[in-house]
Length: 92
View 1: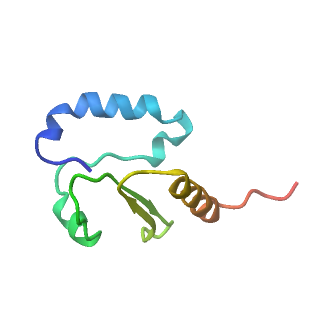
View 2 (view 1 turned 90 degrees about the horizontal axis):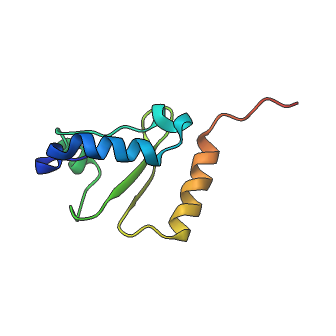
């Protein structure tokens, strides 16, 4: 979510994010420009200088939330939570 003057860089931000996301993941990533205040309130954003990473479950509820520096522990927890939420592949 980007508000304020960040919207002026929309094309640059969107193209950079698209390049950094595998094509199979493009439909699962969104960038929101504007209307961020309700989300900031819901997430209890305490430091607007931090990036917030939010994983939603299939019903739209927050399954995992991280803000601040991203590290190996956070990455492993995100991977575990993502695997937990993904549909199980059919048995061979």
